[in-house]
Length: 192
Image (cartoon, rainbow, N blue to C red; front, top):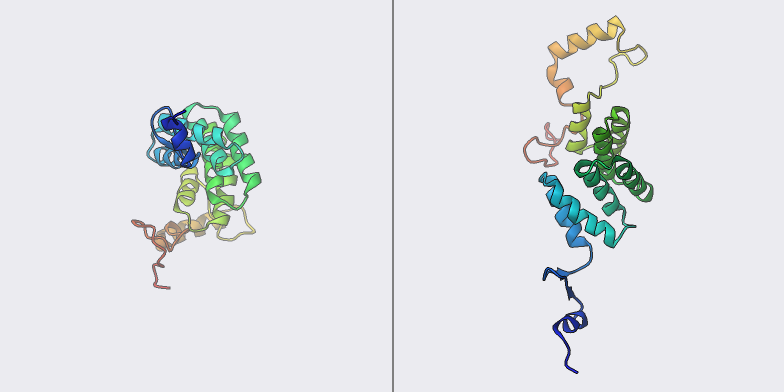
């Protein structure tokens, strides 16, 4: 009996899918899905990430990114939160997982949950500009000038106004200060 082309490709270690693409596991689908998600192409990203997650549902990276895509594309917020939190339970040291969970909470309208997730991510990766920018967008505040007084205390209010007017860059440049705005390079503004 003569071997067919599909049996030859399986013997050589790779197989062809119905679309004619080589199949190397879920990683190519995952990488494509992440790229499409960043580009805002939610339909294609959702399909690619669903394929990756379907092929390896125990991979926390696939869980987290598929959860984000599900929230943004289909509005399946319960599933998305479950996937993102499960991914964090499996690997709690990944700042991007907290970023994804924060975005899911934002999609659900849960500002408090989003702030908590984003702050936790920033604790893990203090130089992550995207985490910092989302926190600023949500209105996260720096601690009051005098920490043992409330924000609304007139002394903190006056000092805050004074500092913002006299030293405006001090408050604008908090967060990942050593990241350049354009390139995200790891050089310190002051040369340190």
